[in-house]
Amino acid sequence: MAELPAGQLMARQIKKEGVKYLFTLSGGHISPLYDGFLKEGMGVIDFRHEQAAVHAAEGWAKVTGVPGVAAITAGPGVTDGVTGMANAFVGGSPCVVIGGRSPLRQFDMGALQEMDHLQFVRPITKYAKPVLETRRLPEYTSIAFRHALAGRPGPTFLEVPFDVMFGSADEEKVWWPENYRHKGKERPDPDFLRQAARTLANAERPVVIAGGAIWWDTAWESLRALIELLGAPVFLNGMGRGSIPADHPNFFSLCRRAALAQADAIVVIGTPFDFRLGFGRPPQFNPDATVIQIDVDETEIARNRDVEIALVGNVDASLTDLVNELESQIERRPGGAWLENLRGSELKARAADEPFMNSDSTPIHPFRMVREVRDFLDRDATVIGDGGDIVTFGARVIEIFKPGHWLDPGAFGCLGVGTGYAIAAKLARPTEQVLILNGDGSFGLNGFDFETMCRHKLPIVSIIGNDGAWGQNKHPQLERFGHAVAQELSQDVRYDKVVEAFGGYGELVTDPNEIRPALERAFASGLPACINVLTDQKVRYGHSGAATH
Image 1: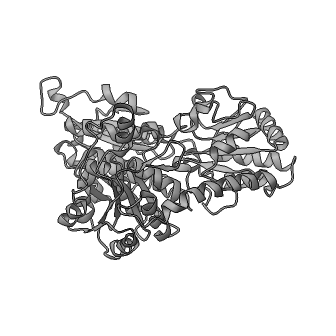
Image 2: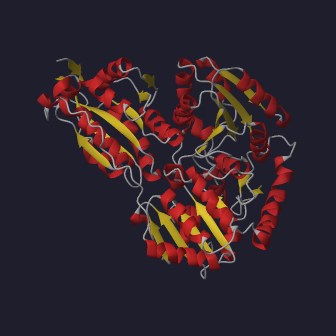
């Protein structure tokens, strides 16, 4: 009967989930995990900040659908990781965070880095528990994964005291959970399903809005079947981006306000009625439209507004059942006048952007920068948005063609996600382009993890829209107060040289015609790279969606 160390007990159970890497920052309380992962044939990626390590765990889930795992040491290690957990919680991303703790035998004696972590991580996790016996580590690991993936996904936290983590257990006396998660798809109420189908069959101007649940419930094929059957426009946000390719005839992005204002039926799928949708109320939503909401989480139904028809269940199962019900009531609608009308609005909005996207002015217009990125990237590139105004410009212009290939922090608006997300994406997709669209402000949060990329030989490219300011806050503050206190940075900072110093590739760009050549050189270098683009400090993203000066 072999004694297995705690780190290997956890690693072996984690391996069953399809996890390949542990994201961490070196810590004495959790070091047995590193040995365990290596013995089980998995990788350990060590970061320069625990926040970035937890972002990487969330990023792994965002690009693979499998919860990522982060290990952070006791005390300041866990507090540093709180922002990453909070972002995953608000965004509904499944990940498992393992936190160290001072020894049980020294409980409440003032041991090094002693802290009751559970008190402050419980509000930002779906499940948070201590593990008090080494032999139960696989059991608790399975529970953490089950909670992370049940219903609406999210982060979970296991606190492992020092003496438990440095313990061992008889392999034959350990329970190794195997079948510990429900694998069926919950389906919506049939009566409400028929009601939704009747409404959509009679609708003349249906609109579909879809978000992250399309990714988590692998529902992109059923979403496509729905919009093609209805002849409905689809608008995507967050992790929903890429679920319908940007060149699909039913895909729209710039005329959402016009579509919602005219719609007679609106289907909202797996995305909340939050600030991004005007809380689901007029003037964004036509008050006379019938709203159908589809979500795996019953508590999301009718949050911020009344909903006429609610379908609660797995999103793929719900959409599949809805399409089957609709097919018996209507023939396929190729689009017709409704889509043509919206396409005209879409093209008009795009035409208004064209002069800025083609501008040769210096300093460089941010629209020109993101247009060059759009035109350069491969169809299967993964793009991470980490910034303020520049990401808003990018989201408007850059096209995504595959599910799970656009990553942003979501409703929490957390800056600094870029390096963690990108490292996870490159590990999962080593042959595909991975690009971070950075603001100069956001680069400063976790930019030191470009050293992590260099150390682990991960060729990721960041392109920075450097306007020398916290631009998303600077312009509103100037308008309101006539000054911009605490909003100014410096365009003279050579972020490209910082990445060069780590062993990567860097380039400063001041001429718009040099953006594409710089992208070509950065990706060809085979190194982590930073393209530092000086953009026009006077330009902001307008409230109406147009660039303003």
